[in-house]
Image 1: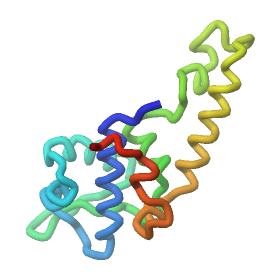
Image 2 (image 1 turned 90 degrees about the vertical axis):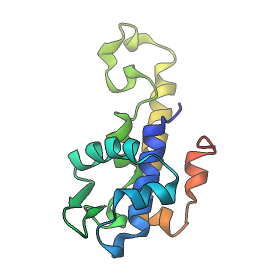
Image 3 (image 1 turned 90 degrees about the horizontal axis):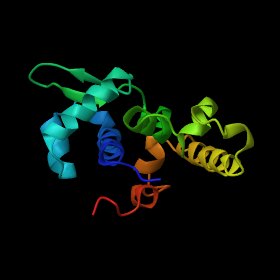
Image 4 (image 1 turned 120 degrees about the vertical axis):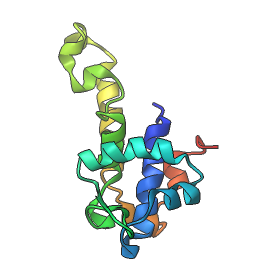
Length: 146
């Protein structure tokens, strides 16, 4: 399985907001500059993250974006599901009816087990864990950004 830039960059955006949680609303341009990412691309991710209630915005002179909940209440699994869709290694894990062979497939159990491991890991780590470096972000995402 491979995360797209949407999942990787969106996670970086959320970690940045967690790192600056106490600062109030953060302008998107600041986040883009700190993360060396396109503000235009981040705007697309913001729409998805706002739509699921993970972030909120404030307008005006001191406006910007902030987490909708405390960093310790937002799990990486929520972020990845929002940006990438369902967490499933293959389609038949989430929807067995997707494949006529699901009932007798000898490999489906492997994909179900791998999906369960992935979900367990991502839903056990919150943004505060990453900010406190109890689990370095690069260990979670690999060096795919480079």
